[in-house]
Length: 249
Image (spheres, rainbow, N blue to C red):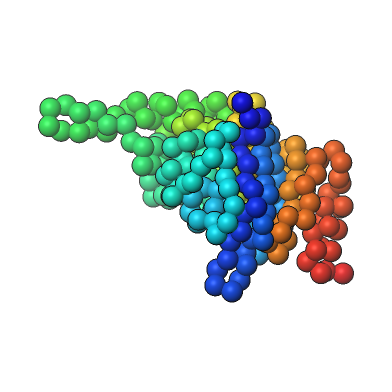
């Protein structure tokens, strides 16, 4: 059995004349947290959108849990256990917590010709799942719009864990959060690893990802410019490598 949950090999992708990825190799081991770093336009989002099936690669191969895969849509990757938490979190502000938690995966009970949403069961499960990542909210009926940024991230992460993620992809999870909320989200990420989940942490903030990552992968101009174990590189060295590749003096 492969020790890698993800292996992407020689991935290339162009949009018209713009070559977004130029033969990138990217891997994530089982139960590993990988920080994916680079400036805006480095290719981070394109690489991840190819991994989850949002884009199709022009060239290259993808292996998930030891098997070659070809995801035609994000639903294909989700069925195999890849959960992605984007910056907008895919939460509906005007809906209560429990409805957001089960969005698109509602528990339905059929009685005769009528389908009923099992709202009591869904509320209980949502609250229990959040408690497992260390969050105690006031009520499952609380509207998401009134939650803090850290609490909203916790809902998205807990939802991914509950629905059986093998790989959790977090897109800039600490962007626009306070210091306290950032600390809380980083703790949630470590809890996910404790549950055996691999994590890809996409960011341009080396100091946030450095606290939790096992390994750091650096992209710039569509190319991989570094792949380091955290213990082998300092945050300043990472910033210097990215700046040099971007042509910043």
